[in-house]
Length: 273
Image (cartoon, rainbow, N blue to C red; front, side, top):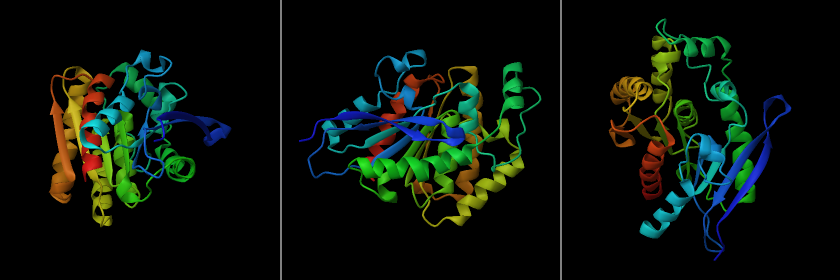
C-alpha cells in the first residue's frame, strides 16, 4: 500500500510566470490508478500550512478519505492555485468568447471598477489545464486517464470557468462541478451567452454531467442563484435530463464551507458513474 501524499508543482503560465499546482494522491495499492478531478482555487482546497485561513477550506482530502472508507472509491485532486490577487483570478476564470462584457448599470461601485479593469483570459487558463497541467499530472501520478475518469470543478468565477471548460472540451471531461457560478447575465450580453451555450450543447455528442449548485443566505449568493436558475431553464430545453443535477441550499452562504458540503456529493456521484 502506498501512503497518501500531497505534492506541489510549479508549472509555466502566461507572461513567464509559474502557477502553483498542488496534487493530492490518496492512499492506494501499488498498481492502482485513480480517476482525477481538476479544480480551481487550489489554495483553498487543502488545509495545509494555514493557506486557506483567509477564505476557508473545502477539505477535499478529508472528503476523498471519507468516500474511500464508505464506498471504496477515491480520486486524485489537482488544485490549480490563484497565486495573485482578485483581479488576476477574475481574468483567469472569465472566458472572453462567451460574449461581450456587459455589466448591468445597477452594479455596485466595486463591481463596476472590477469590470473596467477586467481582461478575460479564461481560454488561456483552459489551455493551461488541457495542455500543461493534465500532461504533467498524468506523467507523474497514478492517474486513470480518459474522459470517463476526468472531471473539473470550481466555485464562483471558478464555477463559470468549470462550466466553460466542460462544454468546450466534452471529449476530455465527463463531469463538472459548477458551484455558485458567476451568472452569465451579470457580465455578458445575455443573447450572446445564450447563443454560445446552445451552440456548444448542440455540437457535442458526449455531453458532460453538470452538477449545478447555489445557496441563498447572502445577497451575492441570491443573485448567483437567480442567474443559475436562468441557465438551468435554458439547459433543460436542450440538455439530456440524466446529465443535469441542480442543488439549491438556501441556508448556505457564498463560502467554502458550503462548497465543502456539495463537493462531497459531487465526488460521490463522479466516482459512482
